[in-house]
Length: 427
Image (cartoon, rainbow, N blue to C red; front, side, top):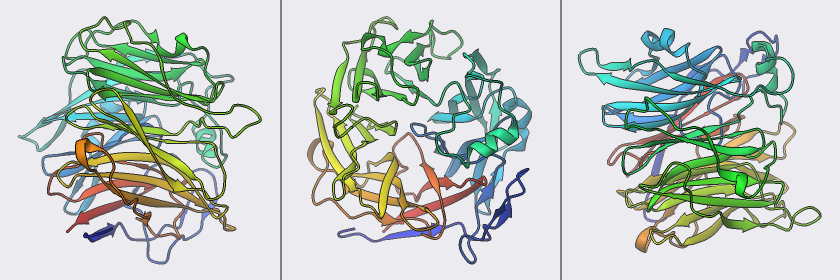
């Protein structure tokens, strides 16, 4: 980084363990390195468009899946601690969370093998912890082909790339300027959304198919929803048409009254250099500027494989490719965070190496933002955040801008359920 130095503190200890129920030895990945904590699912920090952390009351929190539900974790002075008082309540909801936080309240959309849910927490100052607010609202979803996978089958899926054990791969949550909640998810060859009819999320509209105006998407495609200048924006990948699409819902319009589809990128399709890929993540600045990171399918040595797209307040888009592909390194699963106080976009991704072990490292590009929040120059080189000898995937952090004057944190995980942290301090 130019003009700055960064300190990265990493949770350290032993990473060798027996994978739960599998009888497979997880060989030590780094002498003396250990996970911050461990869960009973492979890669608990996935899925790609979701943000699972938030900062409140002077500390970091995480909402992560466990077998049969989800869990909430607090990072105190002594490290991570599970909020076990919430466990019974969280058994009512599926596990893969996208989190939205405001002041002393937290909301999440949760994805499981057979359901989608909306859940709320409130901070109780007397007990200095989060407590449940109401009962999660649960929506059943169409089942994927075949019987519901067992816990063993879901763990095995962590070892086989491309195995999908959920009818919905991912869902994301956003709130518009009027306080209405929005949820977007992929299901049955389409990107769907629901809108709340009140500020509390007690009543909801019927599902609306955002992608129907274009046509069926691929089974592997995903979408995301987020605030944008003028309303709520939705983005999705379409590998059938080799495209990336965007739609805007203007504040005050009925839930199913969306603007026409915008094509943000169009590839060459089958037989050409394909563009679409199901890797994307978005965050929004306080003024409505959107920062979207996405991966392409253009595996050409020396060419950027990831791209940052910025939607300005006037609705115009700009693009900055970054993270070059090589036969030795394949960037993947990008996420974006905003450091508004320092005027920077923090872009983090995993990067697969071509070694015998095919390890994934976690890399960061700290990008200065210039006038009107646009990316500045020159483009910094990636910085490795966690030990290269670890095999870590699915980095995740917070949806809101990074806390001012505080260290910022992200989590990544491995196939054995080990969760590692990188706590980054600027000086």
